[in-house]
Length: 290
Image 1 (spheres, rainbow, N blue to C red):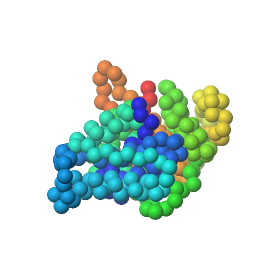
Image 2 (image 1 turned 90 degrees about the horizontal axis):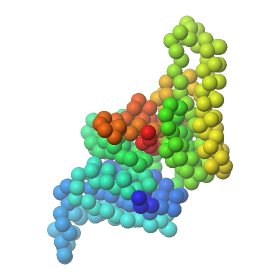
Image 3 (image 1 turned 180 degrees about the vertical axis):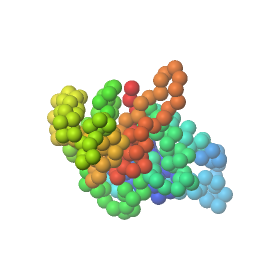
């Protein structure tokens, strides 16, 4: 795996916002930024061609402009451009396997015609083995200095392994020098729902049990990253809603995606990842785990 942050470019405002976010993140982590534009109709590079006859002119201009902006934003950042004559989804998946993370533009609840979110982003998020971050167009303003990094929020289910998820979340918080909030949502059983709310004793028991589980999961990671201030939040709502609520004011929301079984199964996104991608109020990182 190369020490790079790869961002997919298609020229849309969302992908350009993703490039700015990726440049900020690569600079924080002291990694190389790779700007990837993939299109099956890119032609072999001619020996000598003017812009009038170079069929790749606009693709080159897109990458060149994004590179110039990234280097102006972060003068010491190493930036490489990559034009690939291949299907965008497959090119991004291949690049993702070689990258620390892949960053894509997201339109949230945008139109059906959304290029990255519909045709490329979701399949890449569902299949990539390494973290994929989705960034909306409004997350970064052209020409703006990097915004102060807000806290990192990680949504945890507490059933199954969460090591890959927590490793990414803690490393992200450490790189940004911000606090980490671990949020766990737990639905209230039907019998505890009363006409005026939730049975107090049941709510206390659910919260106490979840708090103990969460503290046990977080303890070794807090010891590994003592510089990261850690808070936790138990919310008696479904996990998908808990993650979205906690993303308010955050700099990054980290959610998990279970890997497909080795001997079958189709890669897919669970309800927490789906809710985060469509309704999260900050960039969303999706991390595959067992």
